[in-house]
Length: 87
Length: 130
Image (cartoon, helix red, strand yellow):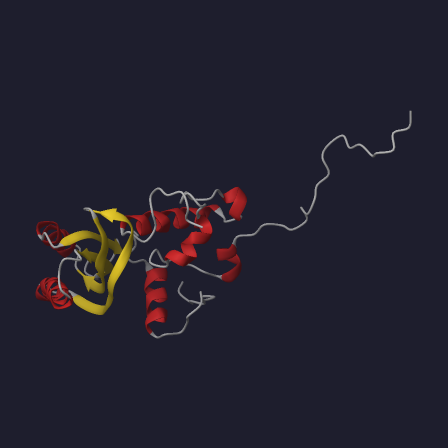
């Protein structure tokens, strides 16, 4: 019985060759403005939760600052605390 | 957030965002903001810039209101003044929400750059502070 389909022991990696990087380090951004809600939208999911570093590639140093900025934006009503349809 | 511990005499730079109730008229809102800037200047603060964002929609209702007048003030002040100001903000019923933060050197540089109108897009910031 010929196996005409190739079988992999582990699932082949597709489109995985692009390395993630921290956009703040790369662009030399040192301060994350909590008043810029549109920019912060890149770091939250459509429920308004902060995205993990493993998805955005942000370095730990700036992840803390992102989180701080998102929390400030929420406090002054620029971002929602909870929602279902942010994007 | 915690620089300048060594240099006590130097005034720290702060910024405050105040949200006023939408029930006020445009003029009344300006008056309230003028009141708070007066508190600042009377107590030895130095106002660097004020920015009135006008009536904006809130991302979620606060005190059952879905809009508010936003006002941003950036200033240099001695640290003791902040608690005074916040007491005044809490006492005033027209204030729905406020946020005061101390600016670090990167934030100061960013705000300066923003004021000079250097960017509409996100900048690649080049500051040369040590």
